[in-house]
Length: 510
Image (cartoon, rainbow, N blue to C red; front, side):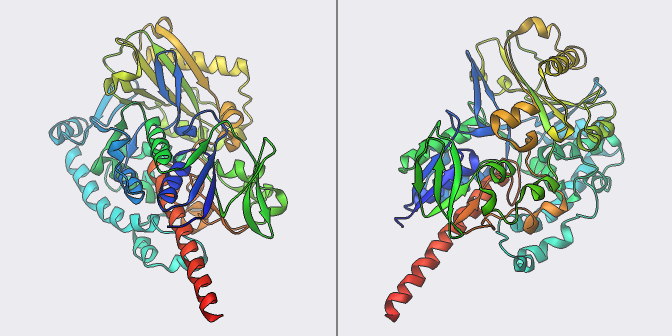
């Protein structure tokens, strides 16, 4: 145990998980959060009797949640209820052909794949067998820190290297298993979790569909926001403090050491360590003074590669659409052109892909009886596109998507059924959620921004500062964000154990 203190910027999942672990070891933990609620992008929107998740809508690698709570000496089941979703997805090609992907019911999965693809289930089994080896080799390399270049010689990296497939795109790598383009898309669309095109995303990330199909995907009852709400309750049980409506002005740095935080209200708070959980590039530009940044200058940040953004529609509707599953993905007719426009040419697609979450099929508590919460996500370019997203442009795109939902997705009379509605555009993500260039999935995951080449969990420009979240190793997505929190917490614990040992030796020598 220790009497030291930690201040954390942002009550997102990474900040909360770090706080939970450190508070359990005796640290006085204070989280400073700009918003009136916890969660950040993993928070909730409540409109009347409707509840929506702001960002993530499903959880994979649920064992990571278990590990975070166990490291804090707690049981996550005391704070949330997690339920597996099956079928995992309903995929819709060309607005008319369905493909259901199951995990729990393999007979249904077999029928679904064999009906649509030649020897579909056999190729699927080959994928699971070969990708398990890859997953087993790569996962350990994502669970250790990279604080200096010598870490690239770690045993975990040496064992992972032959399996990385970093020299081939995710789309081409999946072509080793699947010939049909529709089949490839069923296992490459997960690149959207990274905000990348499957034609650009490294083949390394074939482990994501493997993780889903081998371990399942999950819903937290009450919404994914309950992950953060549960961690916040657990943190309070451990004596940690969360200061809502308390934005941070800057990290307080003296003599190359993070000494605490200057708050927007004029107060200065001092601590032994500072953890930055807010959006990485936003934090560098706005919360760390230019004189304190050597590696992450404004010029350096602009040169980095960033994920796409998303146009979000949260619709509370007066009916239920029984043909929708919990997770539904409508592919653009020309999916490659769609992702090319999002990632490279940075224009709005005439025929975008659309994801619809119909959570009430699993969790009726999210809407009044007989009604629905429809979460509609459309991947679009980030704000480097210079699309203005003014009120007229936002309304034009809204009308386009509503038309597609009514016609292509079969949501008949949707406009008449909408009772409550909220839209978040890329501009809103940047201005209201402090996300750099509205890149909702943070830094891209190209090979030059992975492992050692991603911002380190132990901050590099000054001492006693750390990063957690999607902008640091191992990357974006809830499981990896929680893993970043465990890595960062362990680095702080290791640092303080070393300091204690060093001080003890000094006393003995005297």
